[in-house]
Length: 527
Image (cartoon, rainbow, N blue to C red; front, side):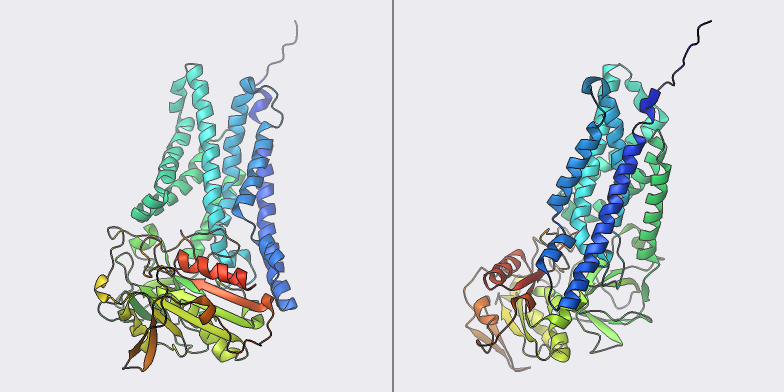
């Protein structure tokens, strides 16, 4: 009798794609190490040299476009490797793309981890990772769609569309549906209008992808699934179990103002924070809202040197998340904005803020006034409404230049319309070097008229109560950033412009810094 070789149903192709998933995992680990190492080297070099290095800054936080292009080239190469006849082997490519998509998830989870009070780790400055997280998510979605379309084409062509309802195949479809909905509601307009819905779908999609694809994938992806689950557990720990309970809050308010001050008692064992750092507030863990809603970031508007017992928040009033002194909250952080060497090496610092963005600029201004009297420091605050100036009497605004861009207080209500009062993200992402961060306003609902709007700034308004003088109109940067002594020698590598406000303010400040060879940093991001 002749010997008959019996080949398994799937043949060698059933296991051929496993290695490509591990290639992607290995490359993801290399990227994570790259981000960690070069962030550390960037800060260490800045500390040792006494000035920051532009080249290292670009290297430690490369453009999202560059990273995506590299990943796109790698995935295109791996998906075609060993494929010689596309028409016969396209389904192998589809399987490979599905596995590659799943193996990108560990990197994508890493990009949203938030480690508090970390000054040298990339994760300590998690804001700069958010834009990349968004685009890696879209890349994963593209790969998943190509995977699904390829199998649908095959089944339709072979008249076996009923395979969709095979239990393991159907699990893949179940995980795909919320992903499609997520991509739709992540469109900026819809995300702003229905942010709570977007946030819930985002979390459901993440867990569906991690758990259901573990059952859907053949051959299995259990090692990758374990990594994903462990990373998600660590993320939950950072959010729900690494923070502080807040039971004592005092709210300082005035009628018709768009702003309010919240004084929070510093929790026990809360670390010393750098100026410009922010915290994230949420409802207590015992509250259902805490588990289904997002946390809310606020910049600490005071410095540790002034008061060890409380810190201040300057926030914009909305109906989305209001701080009420009758409630308890859960706090995580602090998260730094600027590395420690900034505060020890800067010679000239010009800070310009709009509206509640003053919470970013004021502590930086106060820090240099107290701890570095030789540093030339200017703070300019542009505020739209006069009634928001009540905070000047409550906090230390000595020698701060204040500009009022609107003289009609009747334009504002105590709480402004915020897209039908549904919860909105309080951030906007930009992918320009280190221009990521915190801004307590919505892009379309800015509380500051365009800094380019009027060419005023000469007319003054005096407050008889506190004997302070405010200017009407927009500031002229050449004037407000001017040094008292033009003959002063300064090192451009140690001279800064910091901006926190609407796009017009940030763009004009960035342009001024380029023209005068200053370094530039702005805080702006979006969930």
